[in-house]
Amino acid sequence: VHRVVATSTFRIKPSDLYLADHLPLEYNYALYRQIFQLFGTHYFSSGTLGGKYDLLFQYDREELKTYG
Image (cartoon, rainbow, N blue to C red):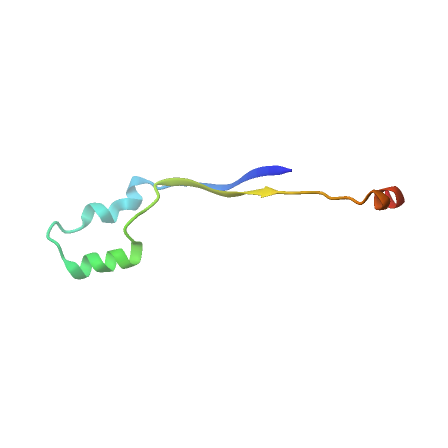
């Protein structure tokens, strides 16, 4: 058995990126450093989180005869 399971999806709304539109135009090392430490330098705008699984059933013929 092989399945792909999507557990959740997400999409970032433009309003979630509000901070990026309100940074000062003049470079301020301390402010930008703080922002990069808090949020990093990259973001995902959308995605799907999930996984895959494989399941293998293995039976013994004698046990199947005995226990059905």
